[in-house]
Image (tube, rainbow, N blue to C red; front, side, top):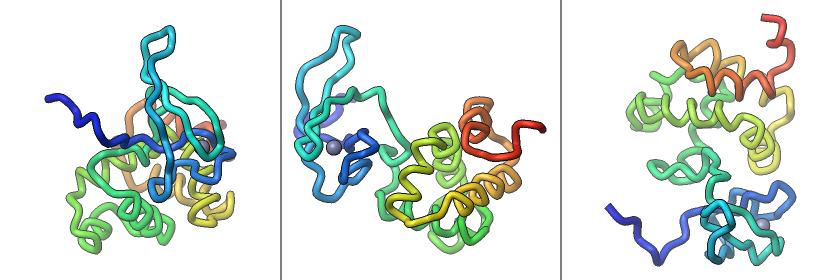
Length: 156
Ligand SMILES: [Zn+2]
């Protein structure tokens, strides 16, 4: 299936941009490909280029940014996957896959959570500890991603 070409569903990947990972108000242009063949994008807000391989959890197609933020808030409040399923109505597999993606991109996710959800570094740390305890099946990539941001987990 070809993806629709009219709509750009990627968000700005520049951490210092005001529209970093923001869907609302974004101004992204699609502009050719780089030498490696990756689609290039340009953010009109920060005037920076980035490529589509720089995917983040919030570029995740099955849930809107609002829903992802909602799930993150439940995780911060230490609600398990099953209770989040009950509260939000999303299937636990969907939530599980989102958490998996978030863990892989934990570094980017932390910046996002601190910037947009006004979490503190400690709250982020608690979120990952909770994810680690609550979700038994995490891929090696997810564990590596989490290890990068979790303090005190390296001695394990
Ligand atoms: Zn930008």
